[in-house]
Length: 410
Image (cartoon, rainbow, N blue to C red; front, side):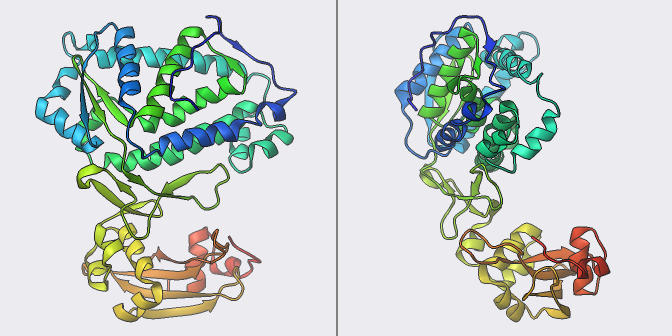
């Protein structure tokens, strides 16, 4: 996919192509386009500053503003530092003439364009009943399989592109980056790689020929395509545009059980997300953790940790057998797992280090991971439960007698 804007040759009139009969052919390229946008959203190469500045300048001009001064910073957290130091966030007040600022005009222009494209896409849904149920079905199988059973192209694209990319990029990488920034910046519109799910969604309709958007909307889509392919994150102010570089390292793993190439941040030994000058995050299987969890987990540190998810990650890091032995957990009950033949359920009393005891059920996953291994995991259960079978049943919302009759769990 080119990093340069694509020049539109379409007319201003928008149309929706009738592909209800040939839906399999229509969605054959969905995965290819989605994976290209996923690569853009996870890119950790240096920015193409010339292309990025040219695209932003075009957006400023379309919003009625002159070319801004570009301030490049090594990371989004560094960008928030500049915004705070220069007092730029205060210029976005909606009081008085604030509605005339470039951020508001730009947001309005882009919102109106998306509204028009969404209306065109919605028009193509009219011949397909139960669209919401179709999307749920499409989330569990490949685009080709969905097309073969008659799922609409719109439902397939929503599940395979929008939902998939949003999970990986907006809810994953971008959400993690936001934890490095002060809250006030969250109120300032920022654009960048986390928007790849949105840009990729409309680009998919264009590339597979399912929708012909208006020429002005295509031109805005071209600009955003260029930006997402050229740089990381940026903030627009009237006279200044703060541009943040991409990460220097970004590591992910596939999300188990997903079929649309969804991924989450993860690295077992080093920061999963790292920017220049030391801004970084350690992440295990999508959970942000303190560096000690990865670098030097100990029973003592686990006991002092208040966050349940962080404790779980640290325990899994050193291994449940080691943790049980070193922490001296008291076994309450043990039982064969009827839903996972050959494995056992173990219920322990676990101290959280803050004067409170919890019960924790230790079980083995019913389905193997991608490497073929079965993951051992712990689940916190109410302290009123004293039976391993009842504890396992509680996690499924049933009673122990019903759980004992399971043939197989996942």
